[in-house]
Image (cartoon, rainbow, N blue to C red; front, top):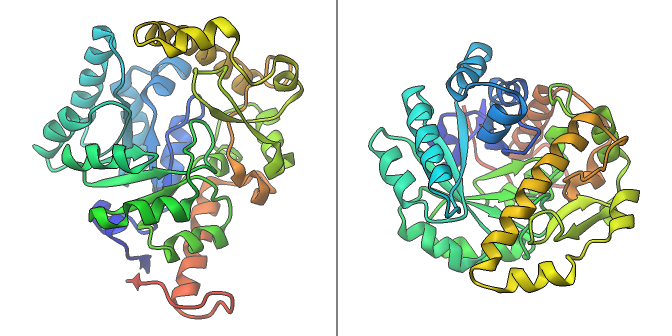
Length: 342
């Protein structure tokens, strides 16, 4: 028995649950474990290639050797560099050749991805944080929206999940909640709100398969919701991280020169490029080497309900069981049934 939503039907998966693409956390074993358990794992190409050292095609084949269930690929579109644009096109072509049929795009205009992907019957969802971006994505032809809310880790939105849902519900596209879900009751609650699926990041970092340093996983388990803070020192825009002694020491606000450059139309791109090069290295080192290094640890407010490191498949199966139980009316704190299909 699976959980029947517009999202799960479209992808042919049992549980409308995404393991979101995470730099530098999305190693092949984690992606495969989530998909094998009935959800869908998302490949983060820069992580696959530059953190774990795979040729992109070979990395996809490594995942395919672990599971034949659906997987997805994340493509981040905003860049003025032709070299980066060419790389995105190559990754898309390779993914399609390797039979990937689900893509999550972020930033920029998804239309070129949508047009190429739909030629082969692939599905494209786009990350959005508010209505104006959702309208642009809808007009570009996407199949659904990943609704990044204020409780997410990394580049969080500004709206609570309930507000964001209300803002986008009339667009006629399936909505996936992204942010703030760390336990099964929160998963069921988001489905009840009308979301067709839920994307998790932080919860899947604290799993056996995720190859980040144990210090990172333990930081997630120890953290409370109030320990999540926003810093614009990583990318020039607010990013949700765990408040660590390192974060306390360096502060969370960009310096005067950086703020000045981030306000300029052209200098903003230069400053963000500088931030990106610096932060990608720091995030990689901290995540893989642990607290002995400068520790930027991305995480969302779902840390409040994460209490153990466990297998990724166990997480998926537990979430599935909770939703099916709710659908059957067996859970007294659930006011009405979900739709469950066999």
